[in-house]
Image (cartoon, rainbow, N blue to C red; front, side, top):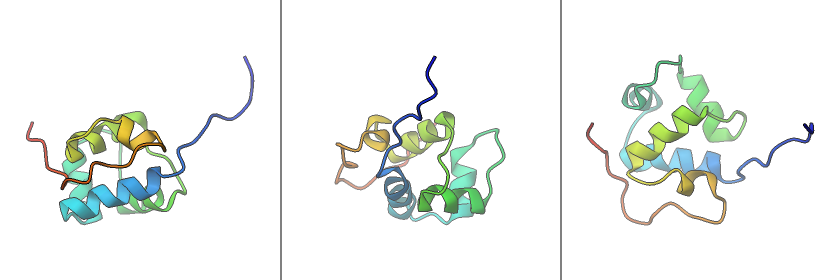
Length: 91
């Protein structure tokens, strides 16, 4: 097993912020909407949006669900978020 670092998405932070803004949510509201068991704080969301930290895979999945898109759009730098307005998925 090698010890090289894995590729990190370059545009993930911008896409995560874009989802929150498109949905019209504050960081606190987003935390409630994500509905994950791991502790999240506004500082966590801020760090994700600034590219200082990466969210867990579960959190990425929840962001994609809120945005109504595939996780591919979040983690693949070759793809942009769909131009249509993100919509909340009720579930």
